Image 1 (cartoon, rainbow, N blue to C red):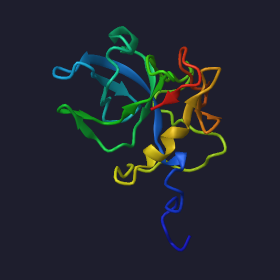
Image 2 (cartoon, helix red, strand yellow):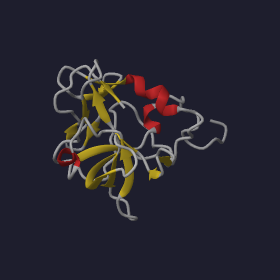
Image 3 (cartoon, one colour):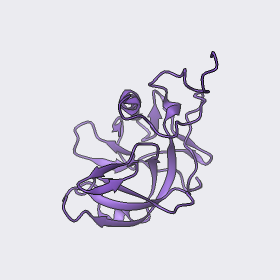
Image 4 (cartoon, helix red, strand yellow):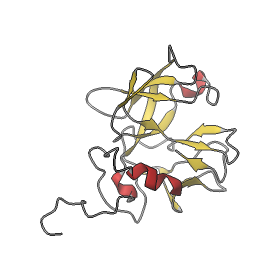
Length: 177
């Protein structure tokens, strides 16, 4: 590759650019000014402690469904303010085809907090931070689905951890974002 940094020649829509980590929600509260937003602290195994992330899941996932939940975090998004709350990533969720149901995508029990989710057959290290102007996630996301077994897939390949694939509770043939 003519002296370029490793990975620079990957297509923009290469799923390995994404840093998806196994996390656990250790604190959750309602955003004081936005009724649809949960504010969370999510442990993803980083030295600096839990990440603060906001998710528009009020009305879909109750507070007790969020607290202590094991989740998948898209961790290399640029931080952005959601109604004044700095959100450092995104919790991945499955959405039913009719849009009435949204569920957390869950790592299996044995997956370690902070573990990097992989897609077998797709090799590469995640980017340190996705460039929001390049919209890599927006290119990859349409290929994120759940199948008839509620397994999370990228273009037919399961979201895998050391303990097996990631799933949702009940949504089949849904989208993931």
